Image (cartoon, rainbow, N blue to C red; front, side, top):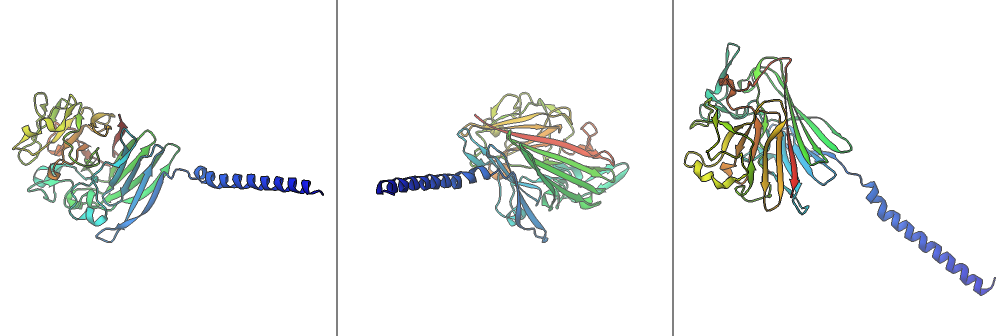
Length: 372
């Protein structure tokens, strides 16, 4: 073989191996991008509660980039990351870093509150001719289920699931007969779901073996800016009436019109515009707004944070929503707690919160996140 042919063969071999190396590098670099499928549901240990119970942390993710973290202590929504108008993601819930912080002194947890959210006058009620005495943990009254309500209990992960466009986790908790004074063994489940439409859904179900009362909500403290005050947020609540409360924050049983009051948000209004008018009786908003027929999905509120462009729309099957402006936290968050009316057991004119065997409570709330 001539020297010329040898050189030509060598060049061919060099070119072949050069192309092979390039192809191999491309395969190594590109393959992980294809192989790295979206992990929609993930579960890890988060620590231990004071009673020694293991606490789990479950993360839900969607394709657009949103994620939600939930812990089994209190069925708390620990974090929810949502985009602003520029696509930047921020956690928009008040939160804490450890189980211990949630257990001791953190007053902004997005926990499931029950058996009965809000207050029960006199820490007692009568049902079917029997009087039940509850734990008085708010003066002479009961608030948020008692000293150890659902928000202070460790729930169990009943299961997780994912589809091509959503992810979910179901948590369960058995509230035993007599717990905090309430009758009946009450089996509770809450399912949290995150869809690719940036919808975060909460489904509640409670089933009892004895007549009892139930009113569940999630006490999430939203800060759509990720920090600072909530007073510049624009709020719309499509309600024309509310249930006023007395000086102990106990519902009087009346239903009054909102028109002409500082509580009227039938037109989108900056939260801070009229908040001073509530003083000195109240330091901020803490009012129950009537939405209409229960068990029918309807728009409950729209919250807009002008600087980031984040928008949160709330839809629910529940008949009311409680607006609370984080008054004990310096107005750093907004609570929009979908619920039945406060102290409903003492007011026959309110939608009933009585749950009986064979007729479980079922309610749904959906938070949709937008950015403009």
